[in-house]
Length: 228
Image 1 (cartoon, rainbow, N blue to C red):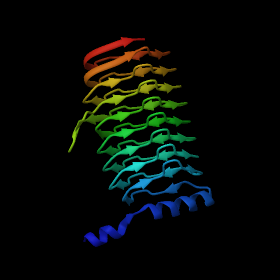
Image 2: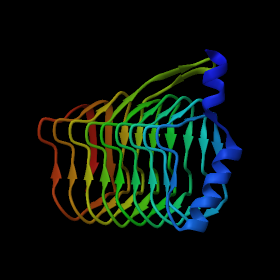
Image 3: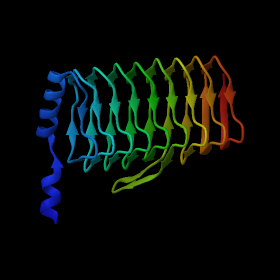
């Protein structure tokens, strides 16, 4: 049984082969519902979109400083370690609806031409979108972050959006954050919706610019630090 499972695991060389084929055929690379050992596409320019819908990663995913000419999809995927997308550049959308990440998700300083969608994502550890820039919206509706225990200590389930630039809106309605939610210095040209959200610790909204409405209906948190 273990041997059969091992044979079905996709490794880096299979990833590279499919990426080359997709670029040549001018289509998205398709890894739907695959079991993948680990992947590292850091500091790469990839001339196609990538679809990991329903995939299971046994290890980490690294795409630091990658440039992807298309969209990046992780809907319903499971990442059993870190998902690191720092300084990622996308010409399309980023979608990770219902993703499960078991050791933090970092998308700091990323640039996304389209929408960013984390609706119903479940992240053990922190979710960091600090300095993210998008011409679309950031959908964090019904996300859940929880503390994650490691051998060296506990990673708190914080949400970071410091200095994010969003040309549409941020939706955090019905979200559950087990730590703090730090949105200091955000610039949003639409609305920000916190309705029915639960933040265990502090909500920070200092020095932020929100052109539209800020919606706090039925929001629960320990303390608000707001200066908009």
